Length: 98
Image (cartoon, rainbow, N blue to C red; front, side):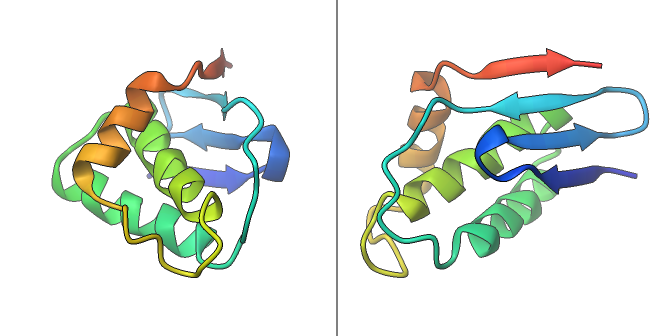
């Protein structure tokens, strides 16, 4: 039922059939894009297991991707739940609901 479409630098379009919109983060310094999509999908899995609501789910997934692209290597050794949830709260998200 949930749909997520990457809009690259413009963020992510999301819908669950009831709520829909676009979520965007402020600009991020990109060091390596390898694994960003994988991180997003891993976030989806975590979010589904923990029954995150769609807006929190998008923020969680995007935070995982941001942590990934902010590191020069493929796997950021600092990736963990505390870092992801902290980043979710720190970011000034641009939210547009449709």
